[in-house]
Image (tube, rainbow, N blue to C red; front, side):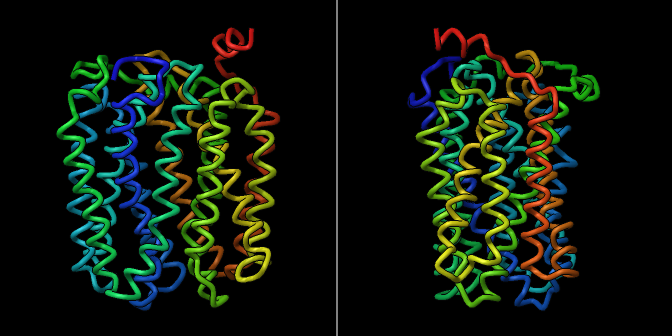
Length: 394
């Protein structure tokens, strides 16, 4: 894609179709804890198995960032999608929690790491700071659209045909994404994405205190998001309710905010948007125990979804404000690795908390963590590029 301020051109639409399909694959596996439960796993084991996926993405992401800078975004995206497809088929044979389950989760995470490293770098390079929140808002719409639709569809597949149908649906989504990417590779690739030798020093990037605090806030946000996404299905089941309703309401709300508000974040300010929306995340998470399966369930889902709809593009755009054009693959790899680290803690740490305190108290603890994120964005010296925003307002 040529660097442009046009968000809705044909190439970027294709990119977002691929995002939708890959996150459809990932979203089907939000229900994987249910499969692990039928295998007799405890909450702690479930947290470990689910967290292996994100752990591998975190460990491999620095290497994927360097590979993106060296080989180009398109190559990494294709490698990631093909690996995701292969892993999705391996789930069919993983009937008990053992080596195959762990290896499959690791392979799945490796593919996802490559895809994210390539795709998020592509978006950061393509759009200027004045359009990044809007661009990541469109990306977020594709991601959360998949997250809204696939869990309830997955529940239907499981009830009718079992977990094998879930895995096949996830594999089909990855296969379609691969075919689209392969056919549109030349049009989608960024002019600055050709293979080249690149020197990347992650320690030098982290020395930037502004970027460091963005990463800390990202870790907190991702932890809270992961906890809700991965454990709300189990909590809903304990209340004899369907988690698909919560997913649909929350992600539909997030999509609304992404489409309506994301472009306004660039004008209003990324930090200011985050300061307003963190308290919304605190409230939405804290209400889940009292609301699930009751009349208040819509309120908790809407609050949680609204927070995601603003905090996701704001964090992405704020991270992309840092570093030079040559450093974008490294910056976005750091950012997405931090995001995935939050998904590790949101499964493994939260699984341990749930095992010792119960699922209801888990969401209360998570709301306290979200409040810590609010304190970070209020106090920390985070900077954002404002030149383009000020010009727009004038």
